[in-house]
Amino acid sequence: MIALSAERMAAAMGAELVDRGPGEFPSKAAIDSRAITGGELFFGLVGATDDGARFAETALESGAWGVVVSPEWAGKLAGSGRFVFSSDDPLRALQMLARAWRRELDATVIGVTGSVGKTSVKDITRAILPGRVHASAENFNTEIGLPLTVLEAQPGTETLVLEMAMRGAGQIAELAEIAEPDIGVITNVGPVHVELLGSIEAVAEAKAELIAGLRPGGTLIAPVEAGHLEPHLKGFPGVIRFGAGGEVELIGRELVAADRLDRDGDPLPAGVVATVATSHGDQEFSFPFTESHNLTNALAAIAAGLAAGSTPAELAVRSGRVAFSKLRGEHIVLGADGDDRGLLINDCYNANPISMRAALEYLAELGRPRKVAVLGVMAELGPEQDRFHGEIGDFARELGIETVIGVGEVARGYRPDRQVGDPAEAAAAVRGLLGSDTAVLIKGSRAAGLEAVTETLVATEGKVS
Image (cartoon, rainbow, N blue to C red; front, top):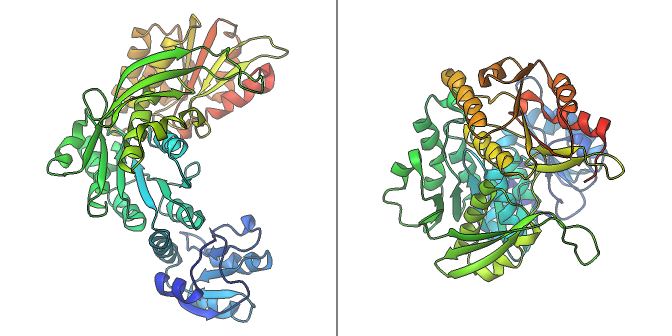
């Protein structure tokens, strides 16, 4: 519920209230008329080829509380018996309403960005924070998704955890203007979006827009090894570092087997008991994952939680609740009727040189002796993409990965053991390598569509867990 009067919403959006309707407040904001279930405030966004206001009438018929549309459409919808707002720029209206609601909530806002790991850090932070926490769903991390996330937050929300994507210079600054974060987390800076920005230095500068966008007295969470981000941290007083030698660091870990049972007798996933040193003392955290890169992500999340005012003990009691968003390191044991046909690591949401190295290292650490890597393109790497792909191929061989399967033309850069044209061919190639001793990593940028490999293998081989 967006508990602002229609007049306050109009003022916040810089819009004109053209017509009134029943109901005191809308439930949330929406931009898709097909998703209207009743009570939403529909924004008719103007796209490159279409005007979303064309669907405003459909949204009202489906039960929308009201609509925000351009002036020409507002006049046509006046008299509909629902709230109608007229705005020259419905997207800007959406963003400014989100900022007004963020201020009304007076919640602590944590903004999370970085070249790699921002979604996982968001997921871990959401899980371990106490109180009423609302966070970005899936990839709601853009100039549209972020304000929609804020406007979903219910009255009484104590913390907002907002993922912030970066597709170019100025975008993080735009998102920070909406969110006004109290705490910023920059997970790392690497060769991601170089094709768009021209250099890693430019990527770091774009990520650093989050620093300037923090509220006065805000806190920044950054890695000890900040690399190209380091020059932007100089002179900023409120920095908490995570990683070896930082204010939040891992000082011990003990793997926990996957054969434990919960109170209901169901198997618990493999995990790790991590001992973390903080400025508030040492604390053990029990996480339902074992990957080294996710332990690093957990350190960033713990640092954010401490900055938000929680104690290490308050964060640790919730650490077993972590659940990651889809396609990010999902573990699937193939087979039917308990017949183990191999372990899939479904990590095909995105890929770049940093995340690819981390995923391959994790594959190499797994107990199954035969290792297969199904690798798609790493997108947006610019003119050096061949070098980056070649380095990853060499790295896989250094780790002892038995078979590398490249999917798509650009993946030839890995110099794979086997080259295939598409996900269907990749699935067929993997089927011939499966067995209880096999672990298969599936990873590539979304453009590669490698989720189809997993879907095909699950459909043909079955799924044990």
